[in-house]
Length: 265
Ligand code: HEC
Ligand code: HEC
Image 1 (tube, rainbow, N blue to C red):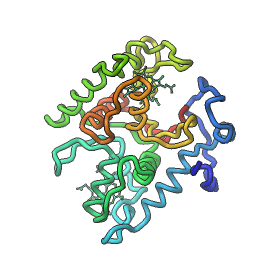
Image 2: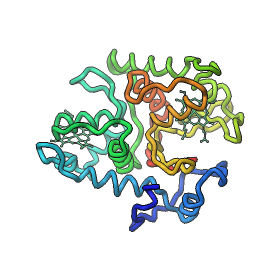
Image 3: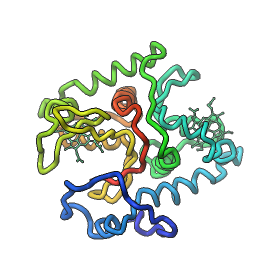
């Protein structure tokens, strides 16, 4: 359990917004339960100490760090974080924040990018969402044909039933919102409410630290966990389907304040 070996110095952030009232303590490790009760979010320790260190570390032939070009206190930079997934002119695609980090590594640091599932990429993106906490989710879904195509495609992926139980994301997160599944409430993923059930504004608190797994995961990894649980074949991280789905689900939280990394079940 790597995270718990990290020093907790100076990171006594009080948990406020994320309720885990429905959590089942028996599924959470005793260490994590104790941390939660003391108001410590190990995800924030991960963001600051792993992500923050990588952000400041010179890498590649250029010996440049992210911080050489980006000031983490610059509001202009920070205000961009909630706009991802975002259209990029140079490749004429919508890319996730994770992919944007890879682009900077290749283009500006001239180094081999960390893979999407590596601890390093996850840490950098967690750090970016962490420093952007307090700003808003604000993704564009319609300003050009490519963006529109990604948005529509993401909606379709969300609604398409598949897998051995013939389920879609929509079945559980919209149609069945308010019902319970294996002790867990099914909730909408956006800002608004469905069937009288308040949405969780998921995009605002991912990457998140999952107490049942003692690790920080990205929102795409969270999608994969739902796919696995629902008996659907997992879509690959960073695929067009996945980025489109991320854009669609993030758009459901437009206007929500980022508060990441979340502390989730
Ligand atoms: C040599 C300078 C340089 C370095 C080093 C660099 N970047 Fe960038 N980055 C840029 C520039 C310039 C842009 C603007 C987009 C473009 O035109 O490519 C950018 C864009 C971004 C964006 C998107 C901002 C927006 O406006 O959408 C993020 C996020 C980002 N960089 C993160 C990182 C991270 C994390 C690292 C380290 C792994 C890093 N960058 C390293 C120069 C750099
Ligand atoms: C069989 C029902 C089911 C299906 C199908 C399903 N989910 Fe979930 N999902 C859940 C449950 C249960 C949770 C956990 C809720 C909790 O933690 O309180 C969850 C949680 C999530 C979360 C985290 C929510 C948050 O606010 O932290 C995301 C994101 C998510 N699902 C996305 C998806 C996506 C994308 C799909 C389709 C690929 C999908 N889910 C399909 C049942 C489902």
